[in-house]
Length: 190
Length: 190
Image (tube, rainbow over all chains, first blue to last red; front, side, top):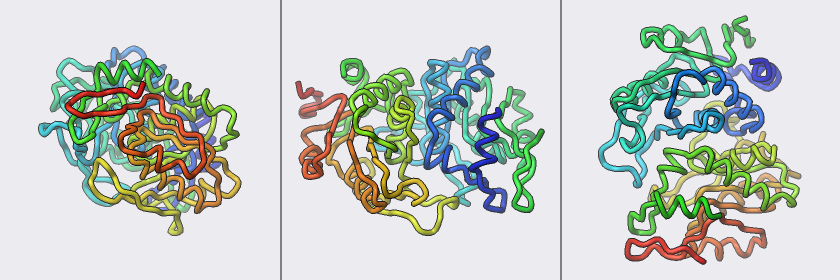
């Protein structure tokens, strides 16, 4: 997706260690028109899956997932990383390693909003190792829901996430793919 | 705003202790069309303030702030509650009591995205005691920015937030106002 790629080229920063700083347009600060365009593109790519719900993880998944949900007119559920007092005692919970936090984080969804029969589209900001997305997949499966597709704004192909998700047999779409971040550069896949 | 009020009447739950559970349409699960309508309404009410940026606090402020920013075509910045590794060492930081967490939380904004000369519109999900919004106001002022307006989806007038914000001399808009949650009821202001 050209406008996202151009924005990464212009404003993305390679901080080393595989960390891509995109907090001027995706997380911390969000460009709403760019995010809206990304949501429209996900809606186009996943239009034929019969999805009934969009699922993401707080915090930085919320903006792309909401933008996608707006274009598909589907409810969006974001997995919480700590259980708010408004959530019932019985929840779906899994743990996944956080790349940027350097530790395991919990992903929690209330059974009120994820149930058998749902067709779930998972949307997140990054596809890196795939660990967060696999965590969301486990939550959906625990609820008896079916995951029908996976979308990420930015794939870092050198972290192996696509291979980690391959056995799920699902469509995996990224809007921009980065092949390498060695030597302070950002090399795109194509 | 009638559609939000009707939704609270239908799906909001009074959990006691002043806690309103709205996680089937505002936080945890988000109704994207409702949120879009709320964003459009904020954009209408704040159209004449010359705002240059929308500011909110993660996590549940992100959806209403993004929806508003989409309608105003303004960048949205969400204050982080923990400092990600992509953020510079020097930040604006304040602390505010969290109603739902029962403890103080940090609110952190990078100086990259909040600066002198900016005209900031603060948007959040709830106006309760006003503590989070006052925290965001302090961050904006620390950056030398001017806050030009404050909007919340739901005001709980019995928690005194509007009085706490009065001395700022700013327009404060809530889309729905709740006057009382005594005896398991939800009584609206009008």
